[in-house]
Image 1 (cartoon, rainbow, N blue to C red):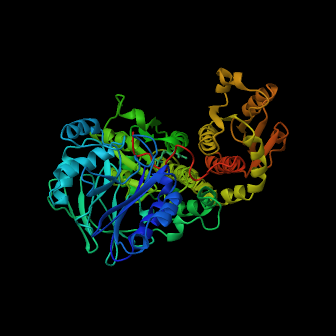
Image 2: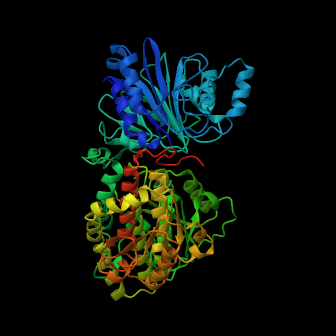
Image 3: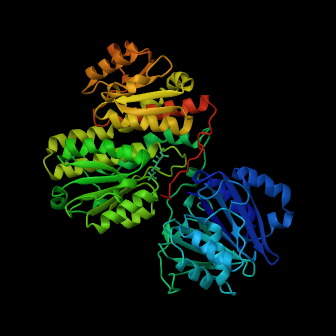
Length: 613
Ligand code: AGP
């Protein structure tokens, strides 16, 4: 959940490291630190706060030679797990001798034992972190061979890690390693970078090597050598990042979230491109890599996911049932492996994850693999752990998503799930004629989204109502039920307005008790099956004086008259409607947060990818 950058090369490291962690700040932003290493030893600076605070501190406290001459170093931006965000708990951490420095992502689960054992040998720990235990352990083994010391220590560690370690007496070397927390190495000309995420290094090189679990890399300016934890050499392929460097910039938008909301017509076009066979009325999803007979034979589809990805999976449930007659269920990834999931070899477990690194989703994939299910992944980040471990899967092609609040990933996940249901449906009972219609509907999605984006100013006005509220409800039926959940999640995570998503019919079973004049209800009341019932639910809300913001089909005059505020979205087929409706709610959440003066791209307590359980 934190961000790691390391640099060894022939350019001044400080700026590269600080710019690198700035690009990773969306992964964690409560404290930050940097260590550069030269012949004089390790120079360390860290503090509570954002990367910009660290940049100021470096400018104010470091002499020019540290800022402009030292060519090696590591840096970190943190999302606190063990110990509050402060200077002492911030990374890098050093060992007992002060001659080794390390940045760490993940959790060392047996850190209490390690600390106890080392304390008995005289080690003194400064921080409350689990990470400090690991670097002290490495220091305990260090006798001039950093690789061996790191491997020896890692063998005693339980938990997850992505680390970069440096020693004062080997300034040109970084030892990087991973288990359960991503690390990639960027290979440049006379320089090599280490990072937890491609965003940190894409402006320097596109040639990257992703470390696998238990890989340990010796990184120098000339390149790298990789071995396993027993120091047996292993080889890993170089991959090419297909990122556009502008993806990591705001491109004139005030926030990444707004940029990514507005990118959706293009993201969806990229996601759909080349994946529809309009003649056969089916989808071409090469990554699924199963013959039609096997697709037709799937017994049950179990989707495992968290947060927004889980909401996308809930839309998917309807698609697989409606188009493929396939029983489909979304399971909360965090619960999946702690229950006794009934999975047969004919069942497919589909992991849905934007980042491809979410710890709970990854754990569910591993559980399902052990239980012998067919596994597939639906990820956005190419080369991510879930994408690689599932082997069979579909990329979203939505482009990098930097905003902590997931937007374009959600709509592309929904689009891919629809194409997947179409493909499986066509292998089962769906007619070619119906398949062709659905292809047409899918191709119309980007324009429908453009249409919603054109209503941005209107939605910003409606957001004035939400910005004054402390509590809100989002309600919907059928395809709009998961969209209601997603709308509520989006609002609460960035604007801190407490919001709950409910099936419109469930409101009467309890939550209606909370309705009153200062509790607005967003009613997803499109002209779809269930519209009349939604109208009834709207009346129930208004009878309790709750202001109603209705999301309606653009030409539905009648329904508009029953709401206090109206957001119109274009008429689409029922199956594609969740996408434009979700975009409208993304804008509503965005503007609510903006009016309330919230830090939209870095909401409090959150991090972009949740790599700890
Ligand atoms: C969405 O806005 C969230 N920040 C969060 O719920 C996210 O969707 C969840 O953590 C899952 O992430 P993933 O898709 O990367 O697995």
